[in-house]
Length: 431
Image 1 (cartoon, one colour):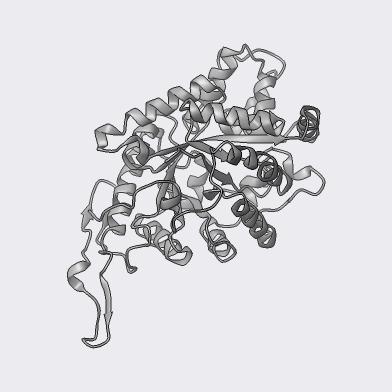
Image 2 (tube, one colour):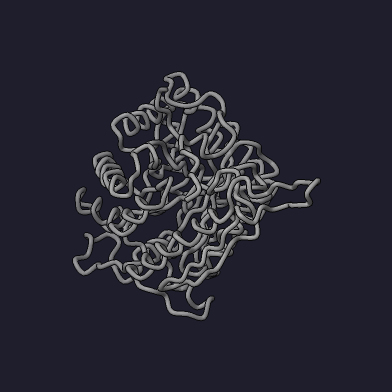
């Protein structure tokens, strides 16, 4: 079977461009469920594998609206499930500020409600401001990954407490659940003590798909052990190929094949029918950037107050990012040094796509570039991050997807019944 690209849609109501919501006609809210459902249907028309919804656990009215005014992801995806039939439904839930039993239960429930389309983006939560909402202190980078590893072990164990055929519902005998096919977890570890089992049968996928953004060394190791899909932040083809090889090479030690993980770099496509039209669209977006919105985002990403630096100067030698967004900061600083950027160049990159890769050009140019990344094993597909909705997504679906289909690089219809089926991921056997 010919290898095919996979596409995720990063569903951010205000768009992935820092000022995308200001474009006339753009969606300007992350609380309009009618519009969010329309976007989800549009992604399904484009045969995307999944919709991915991020999250933030603290609110600062001065920060970018995408961080502050948003619906809770699992509630949102439950509403989307009823408006769609095929597309996967992925959401971020923190391993630092949630408990494993609840996380296992809500994703198993979503998997049942959607007919096998649920995916959990397991994140350690980078922003230390979240701690104040949970009456605790934000753990350091290594501690967060230590907690996350045990958290994932508990969640996956809870998903496996029920055998697939534990619910017998035998009217003649009056037996509803076969007790021999349901077991306790009895986990007692360093950070969690969870008896189990869940009070819900094994989900249609066996286990919901696990997503992760694992850029740092510990992140890649955790991804190799547990993740089905990895989101990556990259700006360069060679860098993307190196990351792809690094994370895939770690799989063997966990008894996993390369096909058991899908790597999706983030990309913000700006597509025009001509090159001039594409660049005019990007120029319009850049024209809406204010002096405060991108600077606040850059300060948040680096964990440093960037207002103290001269934006028109070189990258400061004393700029040492915090460990909160470890992989993100490394990618941005490596690119800046490699290309001898000024600080303002980094600022503009962050404004354009929050530091992710911007791909601007004609449909053929965009398709050619995605094909190169795909065929040279820099990616198994892409997490598409439209600058604004709905036009940014519609341009990609109408102009780029048909070219990839003509080249036999992308599906022409959905196959299988679950998200795992569509992403070429095996259904996990009960351990």
